[in-house]
Image (cartoon, rainbow, N blue to C red; front, side, top):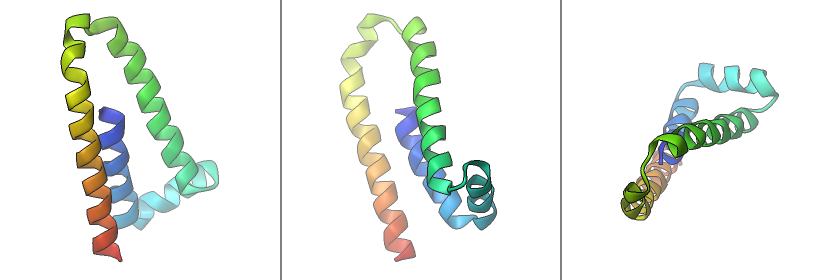
Length: 85
């Protein structure tokens, strides 16, 4: 959920702030490569940490929360590109 919402926030930030976009471009040769690496690392690191902490009983609420996070992320990206478009 954090990686999904982080992806949306990072997209908004780098599309609205050219300094961030340029820094990401310089870091790994293209801003989308840096973006992808950041999201994947967020997913892997938080997934590893939270898999050690979260109790199995909490998994019942995981699917609805993932659906909500995905919907918020998708709506955020659609809104961004409608505004920019």
